[in-house]
Amino acid sequence: MPFHGQDAWRRHSLFTNLWKDPLPGFRPAVLVFSVYMVGEYAYKFINYQLNAPPTKKGGH
Image (tube, rainbow, N blue to C red):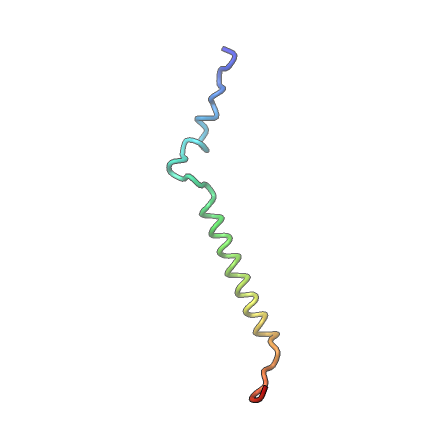
């Protein structure tokens, strides 16, 4: 049989559990991206508060 084992990839664990988790790695990617966005927002917020120009009281 020259084509023995040609369909072995179909029984690989990456392809057999697709009904349980159709997007492997999506949840960890969303978690990492969310942590990055929160960290960037906090950094910009703190940095702006420290380097904000002084405000004038009254007038233009």
